[in-house]
Image (cartoon, each protein chain N blue to C red):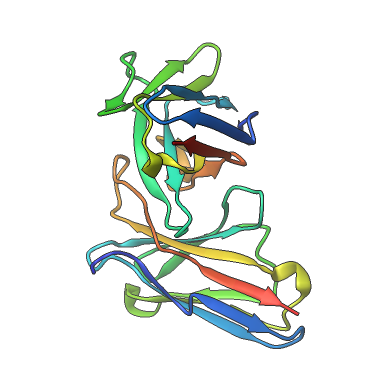
Length: 117
Length: 114
């Protein structure tokens, strides 16, 4: 079974600074997707960024980028120029690309990000 | 608003009572998912529908839990004889079939069993 581990329960960053959230995962599959979701205090989970495992290039979405290390099974999220609105719980998630369970997301426990003004 | 909507948003019930949550997915989405999230944990998969067919149920879903999606539209999640351990947020999500399609989540239904 796939597992996702987020080793940082809480992180804080100063506004306008850069922060990196860590995620490691375990899988025997070679083809899969990795995601970072943001869950603000309103509780609706929002997709931040997605990485396809077969792509070597790291995904980027505006101020958000990932460092995907497939051999190390590591998938970190970098937030540049942090804004107060970035404060939220961030979840790393895994999903198979093929096979019978490609609909199921497996989440880590989350990292609570605080942005200090 | 055309997102995933859930009702009720909050429910407090006495132990032993039955509760039902409703989820309205994004209208053209044929896949619907239920997850459970407890404090300090990430969401855990409960069950999944493609159209009206329930294709998988997690072992987390005991016999007291039942989910339906009649006609492949909205879905209900019923918990019978609630226990304090059922206290959690129940998240509904939907997506189109296909490997790249994004899964969209609702705001969740908080259940407190007293």
